[in-house]
Image (cartoon, rainbow, N blue to C red; front, side, top):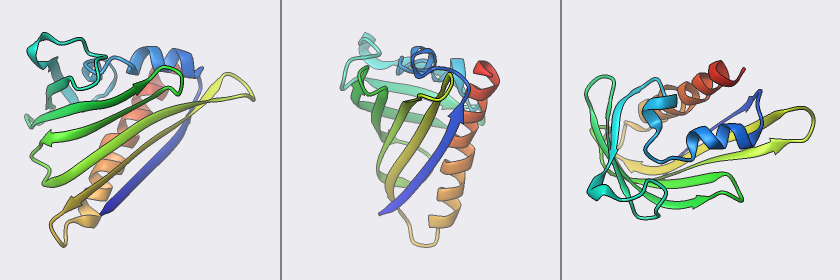
Length: 144
């Protein structure tokens, strides 16, 4: 199983950033790589088990299921159901932790998945930098 971990410090409170990322359907509002998103079957976007169906900027279609959402821990966990990336058993968690020295938060985004042999480095880089770090960089631009 491949593991990807990316972390960052963002210059805003965990509460402010959580208000932006909590909505499982809000990826296009804060992540630059996402073109559109909808929750299937009209379910609420914070209901565990709901499925978001979205497209990346390059036209790729991804479906993900919400596995856990914690307002207490500022964390969201989800799995990929369909994706053009070539990953299996993909489960990821995005978590925010308040930093007590100033108005900042520590953001962590991690994933575990299986993939075809020989693609580990490519997918680790694409997910860690192209998805996770790109999302953190966008949040930094928005929240200072």
